[in-house]
Image 1 (cartoon, one colour):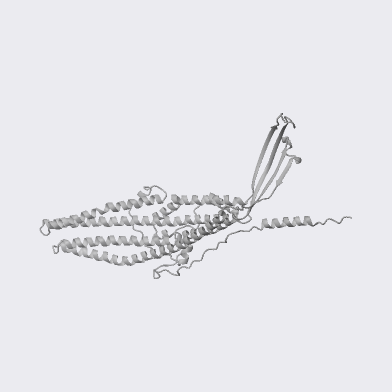
Image 2 (image 1 turned 30 degrees about the vertical axis):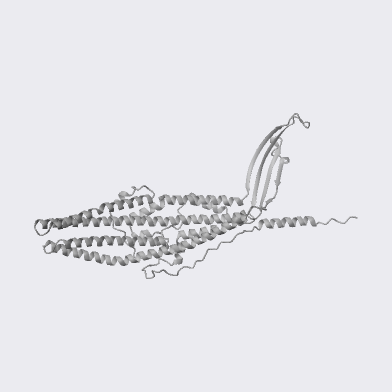
Length: 494
């Protein structure tokens, strides 16, 4: 009498199968998890006594509207909508989104369908079935799935997501830069027009002074040297308008290209002189830590650090085994109408695994390179934070120093005007030589021109301050409806 056969083998197979499934489903994600770095930054600015005020986010993002210049508002809107550099950056963002879909698809099964027909006639010289003929028809599906057991694909998707976010912030940083450049060029154009008007006033004054010198010479109250000197001063002043007109044209050309057009597109609109841009009373300036959060270029650096950290996991996953599950399902028959019968059904399933035993150190070198790259990107982020805070300090210094300098220049203009008036009256009465008039006229010319320069310098310092704190970008990237749809499709593949 035989003992009963134990039933432990099927249970063992089921246990092993369950363990394998647990390994397959309980995937491990190798590599370090990313945590945003915390930087130790100053708690206040050096120019702590500057007259600055807290501003709302909307005021920061549309800061140029504080100038209340309708033409400037139109130019900025045109630039944000049609600038070619922004269009290029947006195209790069679309490319990154599409590449992210490609990367994420590696974690999905790949399914293909195929059909084949074959007719074979054997050789008649064979001893076995000479001249035999056969036909075979095949229709079926093939699928293959590479298991992401160690999270290489997940880390790659994580890196791609961070890269997309970095490109979106690059787009916003470009907006900040372009708006600041446009407003600076517009301010330079208006300042050049103001200086041109000052120069033309000086030319008229010097022409009148020359006429008075000639009249005094004819009446015997002046000398020929006075006439010659007055003529030279007038000719020197007449040499200035061509330079200022060239500056006006250069600024106009730059504005036309920034707005997405050609150099002469805005020439007519900009040719009419307008008052120089006023200086806003207050600036919306926040703490140094807030600047790091607001500036899109720093946010892009932080996102690149996240992507570089995820790439370490991608490199580490290359050191582990790869597993692939090929599947096949189809029908095979000798007669085509039998392809859809139950007897023609055929299927196959397998598990494939591979592990490199020796690669010359390639995989380990990839991990080392990814770690070194992440460390470099971290240092770049830390460096850019310091440079950004320096930009703010420099802009604050320029703005406050020019504000203090303007008070003295305004007093100098007022005093020069009074001195010129008094000297002209004395000269007209014959109580003074022409030289005091010429000196007073030159002083007024220099004071007015210096004041115009100072006003432009203060304005450009304010523009630089807006740029340094990251003002001038929209809350979301300027994308079309198709881009938004592509983003939703990308999110659905996660």
